[in-house]
Length: 95
Image (cartoon, rainbow, N blue to C red):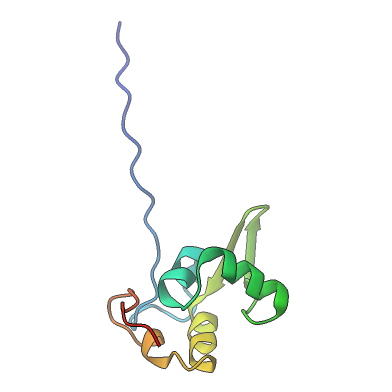
């Protein structure tokens, strides 16, 4: 008897777009895609008080930010164009 192993589906990730509800919960990857920092800089920024702390702690290693919190943070950084982006991707041009 053989057992067929089903391939795992990639997780669906929430992105920050102009249509994302302000109460939507975003993982750290969404902050990395939307903002000017990488993953390690986001967590270092939280420790330094430069990045807002997560709104919700789901587990020991699982946190989420509300989309409205992320938008307000991006606007405060002067990245308002990133907060309004339709696609959820950052542009390749630097400051």
